[in-house]
Length: 219
Length: 219
Image (tube, rainbow over all chains, first blue to last red; front, side):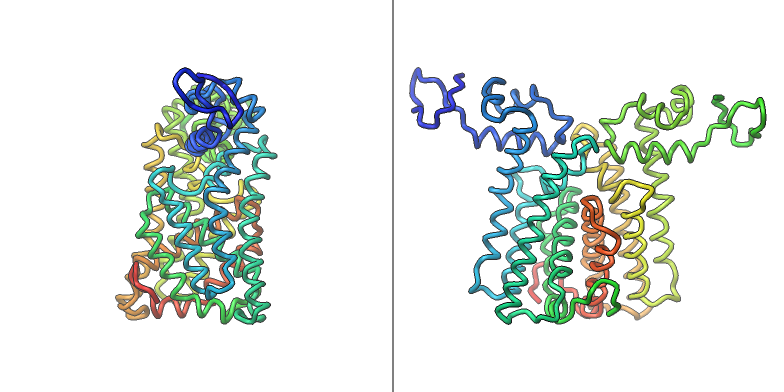
């Protein structure tokens, strides 16, 4: 197997096989997800991707570089789908939130991937010594919260959501529901179980956006 | 240091120091929590507990036995506190749920322990080969859901909670909130952040128990 990096190399009889960066990242993603960053060795990654070690080092620099690229690949494949849903100003607020939750539920129970959330699973396995990696993973989760907060603020600016709502607490509460769904999927919850939780969220949605109290206040 | 197992051995000058099972388990609990079951070696556990290896093997049989005992210790220290809260029939439903959530928030942000939930953190780090251990951890989480379900069913039997509420979905939704709070604590959320999420839950509580739809139904 060849180790060409040029994406324009044509496949054909007798030609060395082109390195497929995305396919390798998808395989590495699953391996890191199942075993964690530290328990996955470069040798495991070579075996699982089918690439040669010099190819992986040439492309990603190190195991850490490969992990970061896999996390980016995960974000592109999944987390950014959610961000796009938030960007449709024509869709009503509750419909966007419901679609966002259902998209996450589909992602957490995707039969082609380990159950749950890549960021949550790999973050939980990190030792304190891998602080850079942990910061990157937490940063990706915070980005999700920031996107939800910006979404709620836009809907407040347009008048669809009351200014009286504490949009920061609303965003944190939705992220809490997402994390909880991810853990439940990881522990065996089905798509139908998660749909039940989403139905509960949506059943209380109108109450939620009428009055989200500041932290510490009793309803 | 002596390795006596008899809990009645008296401490005193010249007497071998008694093995303190609970203190050793508390230290092992933190080590497993930070590094995961598989990445923690018996040698790490000997260093961290200060016990001798034959003492640990004599007491717990194996690393797996020590892990199971640490998980049991965690349940006794924390998870059973929540179960006791659910058993007070005099306290109103919403007050019990709020106290239960606050107790969990205190546990997830306890400064003497790693942040989050021991069961969630160690479950996320397990490889597929440690299926027995994973089953035990998931079983402890399911026990929590079963306790909440039994609590809601009791309150339905007493007439405090409507029979129209799908208590199974209500229990799953609360467990989802608990898991989400655990992940957020693990990623740096403060007690005040979690209190904000609890205030949100309680603000919608009355709506939640008036109508929790069956999975798949739209509100």
